[in-house]
Length: 85
Image (cartoon, rainbow, N blue to C red; front, side, top):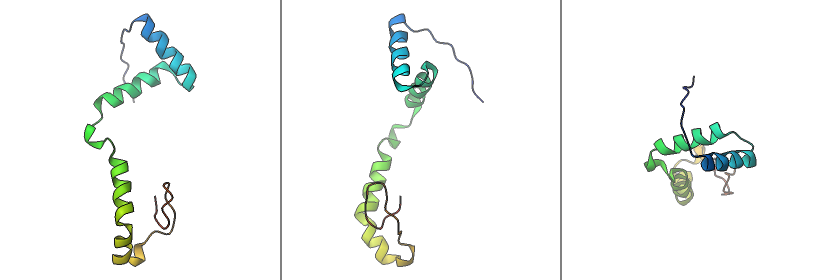
């Protein structure tokens, strides 16, 4: 379910939004919706995925030694051998 919201923007801003939407193959509504999501996103989560990947990478050997039966067998997106995504 979604809620309709009406906003007014200067013509120049609308033209910029329309151009970007066309370039990205999306809509002005989608761009504004994403901007609204970004406005309410918790800043504590910024970079959390990278922190987690770094932690896993730095501690993979210790985990695999401690829990050999749980050691992943697939490569992750970063290409670290033996680590699952």
